[in-house]
Length: 416
Ligand code: ADP
Ligand code: ASP
Ligand code: MG
Image (tube, rainbow, N blue to C red; front, side, top):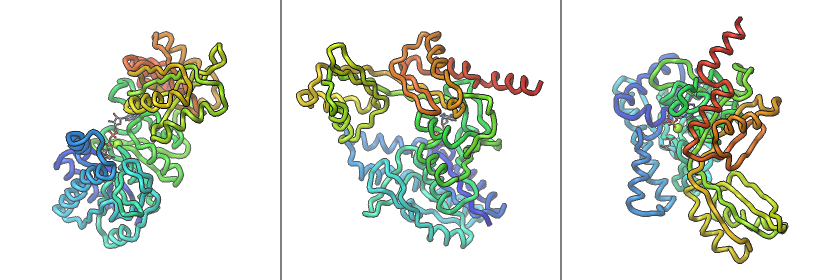
């Protein structure tokens, strides 16, 4: 008997009819002879509503209490799915993260899983029960309830699949699979048959919200066969695996974007060995993560340093830099908000020089200003004004042959 893990996201368990449908799917998989572990998210937008409740009380909610609050969302879903299963004659049990043995770091709101003690879970599976696990939560060794970061139920599912040596981990969601870009915004995006762990990891880190980046990291490290598919339609999903087998002819496999980026520039810092370390330690000590960094010499032998941060961290960043003006010895700090980051990703870039040049040409033709650039082996990102984000993404999507019709043409040409 093989074990399978499946995960249903918020939209897929958004109301009680959908919950009943999930129960039917679980029953079906059990009748096919599988041991079935199912991870669920909080219903619909209920996590957002819990966040709003906390916001109504305080501007800076205590992180421990925030985890205590947010984990209740997933507990509602597991109990309802088990009730629905019992209604259709399936023995089932719900487990919170800590009951399922998910041990995390002592970090609130963004904890990493350290270990999964699977004894209880395996006992229930051996007893022939469907097991429902609350996503996105665990417990620290100190006994505090923790969460894995927004979207973290994907990570719960993949980590359980790795710990239980499951045959597959299926992520059921509101789209039919991983697309070349977010189909909600890029209308010509099309679904991929498969994508490599590395490409998916890069896309997830660069803003493709379809999978939590740590879930992909786990899948890659533990060789979990990961499938993203629709909870509504019975169509083939996308396989995330070691080597993507299809569409080798394309250099760029996907495109991601994210908003809420601010560029901060600190002008005329002294050109000393410790300038960069002093500036960035100041931010790191307060948990502010910085993305792209650019350092430039000035004509009078000082340095200008620009970096990008999430806009939600802007006021804290400026406050820290301004309060350290005397020690950092700079002349001025400036910032530019309402920016976004558009990224193209593809492992074909390793052997194809000129992709960045091509990207800049497309952005120039579209008259989109490039504020910052960063590259990795398989990705190029450009920071551009937020108002141009979708237009720039669509132009790049077309140029790199990702559009729905473009691909059809390439396939037909190959057959001819
Ligand atoms: P869930 O609640 O099931 O976890 P999410 O909202 O977290 O669902 O993820 C699914 C959404 O991810 C889709 O509705 C889609 O808008 C978005 N998305 C972003 N990038 C992509 C992509 N490359 N492929 C598919 N969906 C994407
Ligand atoms: N409910 C949590 C969220 O909305 C976790 C998840 O859905 O993965 O972020
Ligand atoms: Mg999600």
